[in-house]
Structures are given as structure tokens and as C-alpha cells.
Amino acid sequence: MSVPSKDEYGAPSDLPEMEYRFVGHSGLQVSAISLGGWLTYGGHVDEEKAHACLEAAYNAGINFFDCAEGYAGGESEKVMGRAIQKFGWKRNDIVVSTKIYWGTHNSSLPSPRNKINNLGLSRKHLLEATSASLSRLQLSYVDILYAHRPDRHTPIEETVRAFNHLISTGQTLYWGTSEWLASEIEEAWAVADRLGLIGPIVEQPGYSLLNRKKVDEEFANAGLYSRRGLGLTIFSPLQGGILTGKYIDGIPEDSRLKKSDDKYIQSVSKNVGSEAWIRQQEVVRKLKAVAEKLGTDTATLSMAWVLKNQNVSSAITGASRPEQIWQTVRALGLIKRLDEGVMEEIEGVVGNRPERLTMRFG
Image 1 (cartoon, rainbow, N blue to C red):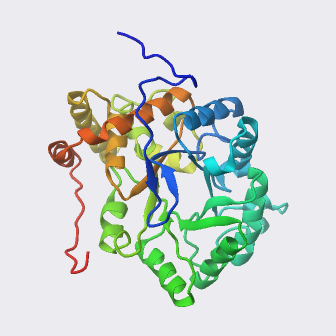
Image 2 (cartoon, one colour; image 1 turned 30 degrees about the vertical axis):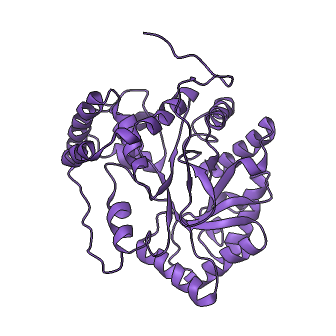
Image 3 (cartoon, rainbow, N blue to C red; image 1 turned 60 degrees about the vertical axis):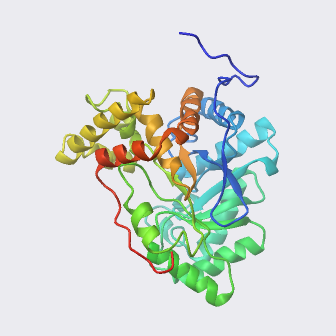
């Protein structure tokens, strides 16, 4: 079998061209595939390898990089900031986001005292935490600033006003939400409309073939795409690695499910061996058969399926090696092959088709 040649950046020369999409109804364009620092840079991957992945992503056409103040206690942002300086990337060529909610590491106080005013979406925490994040990133602004979770202890008007203050002072260009309910996003927009302010243009939910109810049902039925122009920058498109197929025959000793102490990964690992886990693996086994007919693998098929949804502005992925990024980018070449027949076959396998309401005004 012939080995693809490499381009001037060391990437396989046969990679598909990167696709760029608007973030909702805004004028901001991001790569359909983006690189995130949740479990990678600043976390489970050392800085040299993280920088290699960031450089490989940039050279593959990825322009969107996602961080959060809570990732690895702020180290994710530091690694990203040092990479921008190291590679000399022009600020206008990249889109950088971060998320605010969990900022206890910003405090010098012991727990639980360090939780006071260093958690949530109060005006105080949003302003102070954003300043700290920008310092770690070595940037004067981020392109998108997310509310990393809803804060049900802070009035939504206070949060909306604080985000708009950050926009008006040039510390972020847009704001969005992550893992909010449709009703909470709608409430934020209602406040913004009433006050003549800017509402959240983007949501960052988990979304995959195995986790689609919020994106394909709740948000759609609430009219967030049609009425509010909401964009999506989704995370965990491979459901924590389950959709790679590597767990069909058991859990490899060197896998993240065995080694990671991340709370989300731990929550997934607790399900190993359960009835739900066994059903998931059977779905993945059947998806593997669909992928093989298309000459690909389950990871690439699953990523292409996510990107087939035009409400998805970008799918955020992680990587510990450049080769993983290149493989992910190959999903772009598969999207057009997911015709109606293939999509229906996939629906038959996963069996979780969303229930859509019939709306008078779409």
C-alpha cells in the first residue's frame, strides 16, 4: 500500500481542504473542526506534544482553538498562550475562545473559602476571571467568551450585562453558553432584547451519535436555530472515545478510561459493563459495519455525521498526536457521501431519532 506524500508542513498531502463555517448568525467564521484543551494541552499531554498538535492543527487549516479557565487549573490557557508566541501566529488568523465558571485556582485561599466569588457567573467573577484568563493566554481579547455552565444563583440580567460590558470594553468579541438548557438560553436572549444588549450567539453542548437529544430535539423545538440564529461548537463528538470502537472488545490498559482521573471520564468508566454500556457497544459494532461499507472507520464516520449537521459551526476535538488530527480532518471528505440512504441506515442503527414539533413558523 502506498504511503501518502507529505506537504511542506509535514501533513499528508491528500488531506481534504478545511471547511469554514459561520458561528450562527454572526459574521465570525471558524474551521469546521477545532482543537480543544479539555483533556489535552495543559492536562494529560506534555507541553512539547501539545505544541506539536497545535501546530499540526494550524497547518491543517484549523483556526479555532478552545480553552477554559477551569481546564487543568488554568494551564490549558498558558500552553495556548505560549504556543501563539512560539509560532508567531497572527492574531487575526486565529479564533481563540475560553470559558468562565470554575475559577477557584485564581484564589490564594484554602477550600471552601476559595469558592467565594471564584465560581459562577457573577459580574465580579466574570470580570476578574476574564482578566486572569487573558493574562494566561497573553492576549488582549478572546474571540468568544463562554459561560461554562448556567449559574442559577446569579440573576440572568447580571450575567447578560457583565458579558456585554466585556464586549464593550474589547475583552471579548462575542459571548456564548455551554451546557445551558434551551429555556436558559432563551431567557438570556429575552433579557438582552429587553435591554437592547447582545445575546449569546453560540452554545457549546456535548453532541454525538449517542448523545443528540439536546441538539437535535430540545434546541430545535425551542426555535433557537431558526429564531435566535444560535450556532453550535460541540464537544465530545466521539462520546469520550466510545465511538472509535476501541472498547468493543474490552478496555485497553493504556486507554483514557483506565488512566484518567477526570470527573467526566470517571463518570463514563463507571458505566463499563452495565446494560447501557453493552447496548452502546452493540450500536458501535453495527456502526463499524456501516463504516466498513464506506471504506472508513467508526471514528471518521461518527465525526462526519456530526459535521453533516449544518447547525454545527465547529466540532471540538482533542489530540495527543498530530496523526489524530489528520485522521479527524479526513472526516470532511466523507460528509458528501453520507446521502439520505446512509443517513437512514445510521438512524436505524442508533435508534434515537429526535421528536420534532410541527411549528407554524419554522
